[in-house]
Image (cartoon, rainbow, N blue to C red; front, side, top):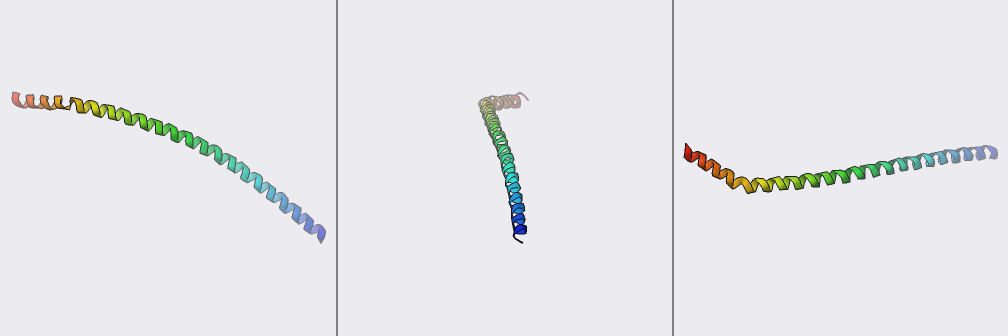
Length: 80
């Protein structure tokens, strides 16, 4: 009886140790995945910032030249 309890205990111990090892491996895999996703997020944020600044530059350029385009339309209306 006691020998059976000891064997059962040892098997349970071995099973729990294997579970712990699997969980540690999963934790490491998730840490690496999280790191990769953080790098992707930072890269996307930099790209978004770059695109936003380019958009602002183009919008300012359009706004600066808009009065000229409006004047051209007026000249075209008068010439008809």
